[in-house]
Image (cartoon, rainbow, N blue to C red):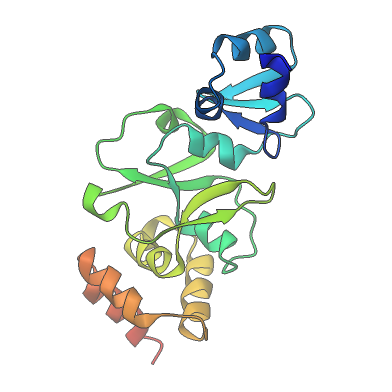
Amino acid sequence: MNYEDKIMKLFNNGYLKTSIVVNNNIPRVYLTKLVKSGKIERVSRGLYTNKEEINDELLILQNKSKYAIYSNMTALYFLGYSNRLPIYYDITVPNGYKGSLQKNSKVNLYYTKKEYSNIGIITIKDNYNNDIRIYNLERTICDIIKNKNKLDRELFNKAIRDYYYSKDKDTLKLYDYAKKMHIYNKVRNTFEVLL
């Protein structure tokens, strides 16, 4: 089997990262040859798709930065706390981030301190069965409380109410994250209104 055939067998859900090719001891030049021949397409730096697949925007956007985490309303959608399919994707990156996501018109970029950026990250399957990183429910609730003025009020209120009445909530984790992120009083005051 030649290198090009081996590459074609490495695609997973229609996508392939350069690192997978390198880990299989296949020279990168064969990726370039496949692109030039039109068999595959480079959709982002280090990410390729075979021509038959529909583009998975979530995977492509997240691949643009190793720091990109889906958050706020986008995370609420994937966690089942919003039924509104995101038109724009909420992505959180560490302060000081400089990259192509800043210029993307489909992205609402949120910034956080570097020491908070890894709090509550989980990996889920998106609608194309690809792995994407989002914040868990408690981190997302902290984020939407912090960013309340930038979000749709109706969606915000629904998410807070749904969380408050949820059997799956972990209030210990929520308040632990709130303390770490220095927004404990904001979080507490938000839920005291519901009492």
